[in-house]
Length: 200
Length: 172
Image (tube, rainbow over all chains, first blue to last red):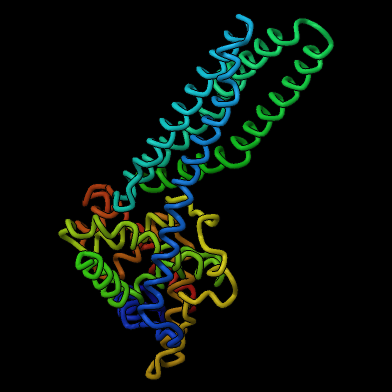
């Protein structure tokens, strides 16, 4: 196919493209490059496993902190501890399920497969963060409130604690909404654009 | 140990043979030189991470394009997971290209015009045209992108027309 006029036609474009070989400055040996790539790949994988480990440790610490109250506290406090433990299990399960969607992405997928898979992951994260009130905020807050009511009764301390819990909950809710608005929605739009470009 | 050594040799050979191709992908998708360096490093890391799936791949070229394009286009790249030492100005994986001794000024200008024309395409069409310029078959392009061969033909027909017009326009 001719490019027309005095321009480069596509056969020439092909030759130009293929004949151009970058000659890199010799800076680093192959062994050094390999070592660096392996270090970065390990750092990448470590970040993911560290996140899982931190969640499990945080859950364990909270459970250990509240367990004595399950044995010796008043019944309302014991009910609260059970609610908190259930909430921790719910949070870990939800986060683990979200992670499985993430892990389903494979680097050697075709672009169409990867875009669809990445889109599903982003959709799932949006659903997760938008429903944060029902699985991340209300269950542990309710449990903690029951524990405090059981220990301190209905008084000024409980009122103050309720206000504190409400403030923290609003903060968590707002930061999750911001993450959806500033990061996930633009990413979703970007993936939609790529899918449209791919499928026409 | 032996398996690891084989993997390392496979990886180095892959990078050695495809370095110009990988650099061209970075040039096409990165917004500036720093982004090019970052993307090149990310692609190498993802190629290494994806290497176990390379063994079963019947078409190494298709596999390489998939991983590289997926890294450039679809993966949300994780800056935080990268070692900060590799992010500085002297990023050691990236080696600045120097013109080949036999490369004329005219040839470099033609290449720049070609890159400028490719930059006018959308992200997916950039991938299609790069593989076309690299003489990949419709089948390979279809396998990398996950669309049908006939649709690759339709896309290429349109892209070739656009590119030819842009290249002629630039020269004029």
